[in-house]
Amino acid sequence: MSQRLRIAQLAPPYEAVPPARYGGTERVVWALTEELVRRGHEVTLFASGDSRTSAHLVPIVDRALWQEAEPQDGLAYMAVALDDLYGRAHEFDLIHSHDQLMVLPLARLCPGTPTVTTLHGRLDRPDYQHLFQHFREQPLVSISNSQRVPFPEANWLATVYNGVCLDAFPFQPRHEGYLAFVGRISPDKGVDSAIRVARRVGLPLKLAARMPLRQAGNPEAQRDWEYYEQAVKPLLAEPGIEYLGELADEDKNAVMAGAAALLFPIDWPEPFGLVMVEALACGTPVLAFRRGSTPEVIEPGVNGFLAADEDELVSAVMRLPELDRARCRAGVQERFSAAVMASGYEQAYAKALGTACASPGSEGPPGR
Image 1: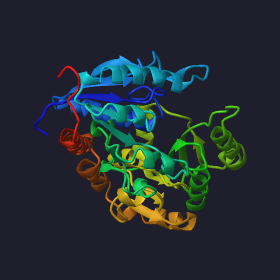
Image 2: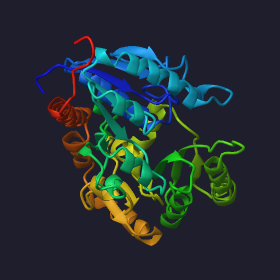
Image 3: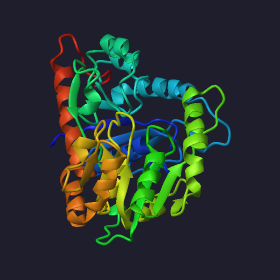
Image 4: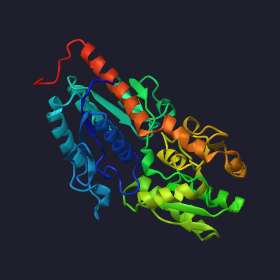
């Protein structure tokens, strides 16, 4: 894209950009922002004040909310941030939101500066049907084609796969004889399946996983905690199972790089699964259940295998010698690098700007 744009990037306030530990959305925002700045765009990042960026940083909160000792209400901070952002909309050619849904009403009221919204979460919720029907003209970006399935009629500009900065991931041509699981402890992520598969094939398993929160009145947090107590905790005492907790980037990447494979036995329609790409960047194949986006990331027999159940995952472990670790990393360079992601977003930005300029009655941003 030859045109240099003034872009506002809006990140959630819960984790820093990039996150210190867990936080896929914030990691993607960081990689995209850094690459856009490198390409000469003027980028303003609205994120937590403890973020690190080459862009101009506008703090939403002083410190990422999930790093605070006491739970904070992110909606209260986002309301103020959105008021600030859209009060300054005339300073930008385009606003790119990564905060899922709150931005949609304001985006509609500010047609002069188009807003592109990347949806990072699952969309298969019944109440979303009404929401996306109401805001059906707002330009959206999906992070996988499978994510679109509940709402194929929405105004999708593009599917742009999440990308990573390959320099952050050490390539390891030879593994160290163990399996790895990286993620959060949740029934969606299938930690118990990963443990059972590792035990069946007789390989050690390193679990780099975030413990669920214990939050009264939060049904999802309660579900995850009960899953940990009932399904996961009893298995952690099994021989060869090493629970490492939630690791910082350097330690997490080292665990992935040394693994024979990353186990990804998800039990939900995963919108993307950034950890798959991170493992592949290290040269580590991925063995995943065939759910959500996994068929768009995993090429069976090339960078991993897809399975329908635990029996097929066990069989897939036995086929790991067929895979070339160098090819796993090369595939990330070709399809999931920060540069490829930024090019995809530049095309989406151009489409959004062209649509805004062509819309009858639309005006340029105030003061332009």
